[in-house]
Length: 231
Image (cartoon, rainbow, N blue to C red; front, top):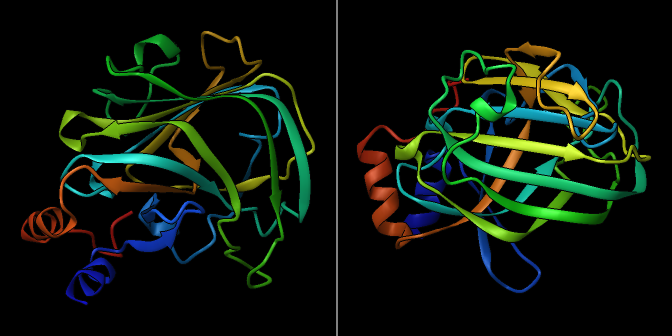
């Protein structure tokens, strides 16, 4: 299958949604695809507001519809778990902010196409499967109730998380690298970040293409596609 071969070249993974829809998943930052980030993030554990920006170069060159977000537990600070969050709120948008640094004023980072993609209670779990020193599997899954159409030509991808109540969720893998930055503060209603740096969670963004995959892949490869060495 030439498309599946092209997917390997581009650094994408194929998976299946429960309803039979095939998803393509890309890990951002790309440098964390096959290695542990080395940090532990409480992004979906504490009562927190967290914004993270991911470079558009991590994604195909054409528009995609993001349907799932997947985290993995930190091999250092994480553990197997099953837990419930009472209210997790996730927004996505294409932002004009650079990936070198986000503003500590959260409202200044949000793109004009912001959409609430998940808002409600959720059961999460991880079996903590993978090498002892990591990386573990991306098995902490949030299936979006409202998919988000992301066009990389419109800007970098901004992930805005508001976890309203702390829950028994493990620390997820995070690291520092080019093409990612974050700002966060404790409390879901925070309007400014107390901390801002060049770190970010390692996340799999799982999507379907908005246009035929063969056309999009050809365009992506023509533009250089993805390379595993890119952070």
